[in-house]
Image (cartoon, rainbow, N blue to C red; front, side, top):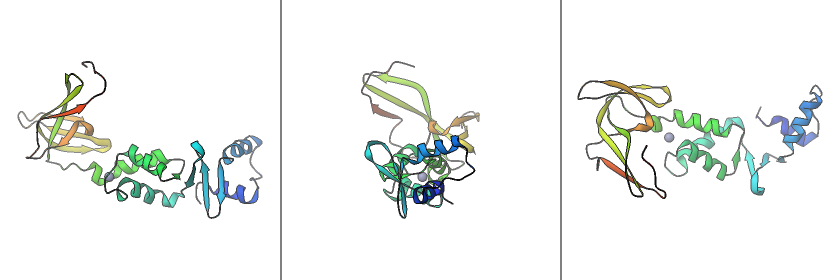
Length: 192
Ligand SMILES: [Zn+2]
């Protein structure tokens, strides 16, 4: 049964389950007025007079997969994937949660090999006018991967091992172009 089975039943027959309380019925009626049934599809009225097609549970993962990498051959972030799904005109109630879970379990997106050299992002920012320079440290060695993107890394100079979050790491390659990266900023940023 898709998550919207009750909506279709109601829109097709006008019947509500007899055992529902008045409160449940009112709540449902208030929600279901945003749906439109055009056999075999159910649409949800969203903002700006746009109808999004309701996706049944068993099609959710193929829609996410399509928007995450198949459509443009790039592995988009969870947020960008969600935007793409909405732009494609698809809807289901747990769209944000499901896309995030999918992204977190996408091997390609989470893959950092054990033993791989990584660079640790130095959180002390060195600031220049209208430019933020990110500094990357000397390479560390990936020792252990935990769920939710946490890693143990080892400093090869003193064998110290410590935990860091994935977004502070970057895979290191021998031909890595430079120690620093620059990002143009529109507004001045204060030293943190
Ligand atoms: Zn991915």
